[in-house]
Length: 243
Image (cartoon, rainbow, N blue to C red):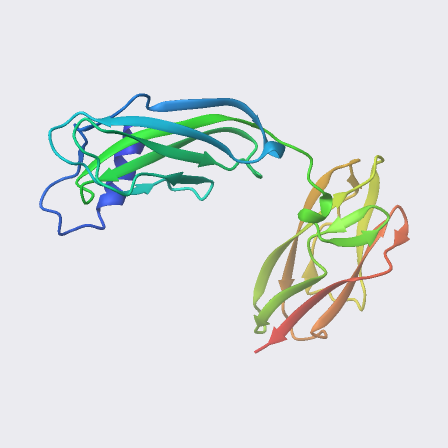
């Protein structure tokens, strides 16, 4: 942890070349605790918070001028007014567990006195994930329980001989295994992929699609998913732009 923390602090303060001295750990601000463990928290319950209490045990005023966390999942509040000697205060730390299952440990660096001093505190815990509606990650319903992340795959501008790769993601929103493969309409052999054979009940999959542009086929190609022997009503559209 010391090596990682030192690297973080180097990055934090390397943007301040005009500082007259190296940043140092604050000897004035004393936190009652440095690490708070939320334990197990449920994703569905939303943001959790903890207040870190501190005291200025020094003989001079201390001004907290910023906080760095390195993650948008952590928000914070801190006193904007200088802290007098002997005075106490609170740094409030919020953690958003949305889409972050499992264990977490987040460092919060409290910067003071124009970034010449710092204190490090941490929040940690374990997020118990909740069930998310399938359309959050797979917005396109192809019928028969098949949902995918694309309706149109845009490979952009390509010149002859160019190759690009994209990932088609899909999910089986049924309680039974799904036989799945894809049919390319028009015989466009520039499109290369390996069809999945079976998608487990409630399962998800990824199929890399490579487009090696030869200039011999139309710019728009329709690819139909076939679920349990039944073609989808709507196609996946694959499109390129020519140089």
